[in-house]
Image 1 (cartoon, rainbow, N blue to C red):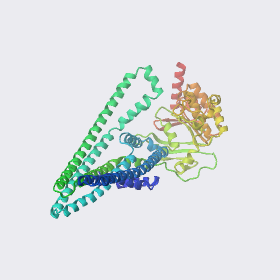
Image 2 (cartoon, helix red, strand yellow; image 1 turned 45 degrees about the horizontal axis):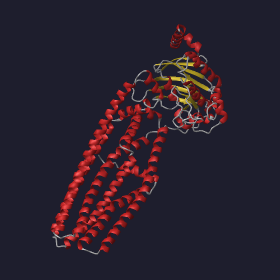
Image 3 (cartoon, rainbow, N blue to C red; image 1 turned 180 degrees about the horizontal axis):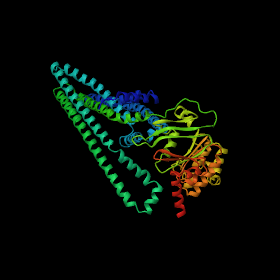
Image 4 (cartoon, rainbow, N blue to C red; image 1 turned 120 degrees about the horizontal axis):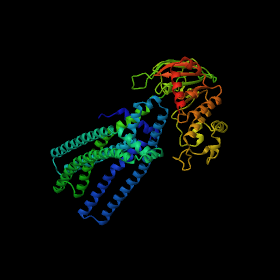
Length: 607
């Protein structure tokens, strides 16, 4: 596993964006953490020597006082720096989360919907859940490595004093050099073993996490939807599906337990191996300093100091090696974060929008297929929609109706051909400005657990008159006035226990009111009323048709009776535009539209 300099460069740039003092404060905090044991070792050695030599009680107590004051000072300074680091770390984590959320709502919708986008989001969620936040881990591992480096540096100072004392006591230079040579060989061997152990551990860990994407999706589905969603709750109770769900969820839980057991086993092996290496090296150091004290080459107090220093040296080396391995192991999770932030955003042109609300739309030999598929969803589709046209798009499931709308909305881009607005390729317009021309009610529209007026006005300012007009047009004015806070009432109960639980029909009316409130030149309805009965749907479409007057309307519906009022009807089948004309013209043509019409009419007559 190589050291990814580019990832760490981006990451430390992110540190600097939040606070240029985060890294210096982290370094200072870990410097104090590293020197604290040496403060204890230094004064402990002085106290032991004082007691061994029979020095006065006052001198020994003074050394003990200095020890207490030194430790207290180091602890106090470390606490101040630690508070700053923690506070700044939380700002960093919040900022990275904000960037992810902002990216999620701004990224190219085609990428968001694609397998690549969904897989990346799932992997990020899985990594955060199982591994922890990668930025938090980076700070932790960087701190470990820095404290290890400072500890090694301080230990080397003490080891140098140890060598000087030995030489001063008459120990031969050759023997001393041989001792240090052996010491370095042992240290290098310990570092190498720790690094290899850490890298092997991180590879196994990342590989284990990589197998969990599908499992985590299922786990999240059960936890967030099946167990907490009242819509599933009705099905579970009425159809006695509790045992089935418990059995299926039990399988997922077993897989999770097996995964956690495997992770625990890996962690235990990793820590045990590091502990054995560290204990072995520290034991040799203690034995060597003890032998030197026995031979009276160093004082008894210095046995405490130097054996402790050597132990801290090996501990520091282990921290450095483990920190580096952990940083490398954390890099793939950081890479996922930056890969997500670097995903494409919608291409935005610079062409000026039409100065008026007069718009003409044209599809010219448009071909499209969804990513990862070979079959064309649309094949050589061409049609025009003039200003004020009321158009219906009909056809069997999978005929390409909704795909046409997605392309018009620039949620996807044609693979071949072009879609024009007033003669200009729609890709040439600024996308935010272009979207202001379009108001759409999706088949799978969503309302949020926000205030009612926010669901309708979106990010814009609240326009009271337009808001109440849109509600009145959809027959919702009286219902909203009866709510506990009017248009300030919260929908649903995720954020407000008083939240209003609206019916499916009311939700549809609010979704259409939202589109009416926007007052865009082009109004699109992609089967938002599929749950209504045919009569109610026809009445809704006729009312909308009347309300919107001379605006351009595009309707999609499976119920042909709802489209009779339209100026033209486009009939699609297998991604091809089969027929085009008014209701009467298409019936006379005797083609696909007539077959669909007679099939539906025959059904209703039979009923």
